[in-house]
Image (tube, rainbow, N blue to C red; front, side, top):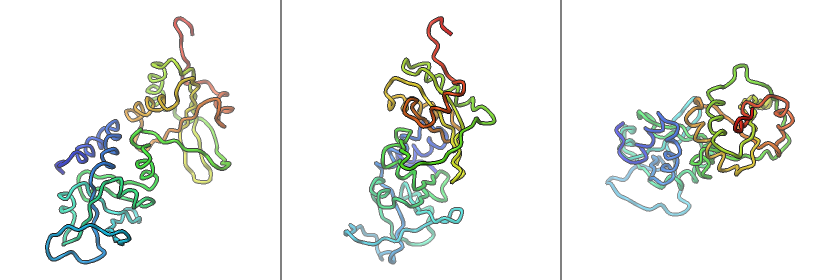
Length: 250
């Protein structure tokens, strides 16, 4: 695929460089996106119309691992390479389209050299701005049972990168790491507890940039602030992987 617009250039860059992904997500919201409409036959001639409120659209889907994904395209050229027969298509800004299909699974540019699977939770993060910032904030609303322990192999690719960020900031005093498991779902995430006196959002912005450069594909890291976290009792009982060193003091 030869990129034909800013969104496609960002998509290609994001596939190779995690630090380029926030720009891709921002352009995904700001750029026109296309979907195929199978609700009625295509018109005899090319024409443009405006959909009225309440109009039902039957978007074309692609099966991916047994799950129907709405096919979304970044340009007419990519869409035309995908279809094998005449189709109607709709164009709207990414923000409007994502709002309409919230809760669905999407696949951007199916069949093209560069594409992106977009899951329902990811749509929420894109619309909320969390994907552009590089992190999302979640509040646990119900009592939840979790298991805490230490990873069998220390994730030094993360701790080295995070320590570099912490050392550059005066407000971070210590940082702790654990492996958190949710028995109900079988999920496992690394969790980092940070003892800091500074602005949390500013710190998370710096941390997110470091993770984009160092985290492995599909690796999830959760961060909690020491002092107001249920994980603190466990984390305080293990050695910190980072501890601020002051001039000449160890």
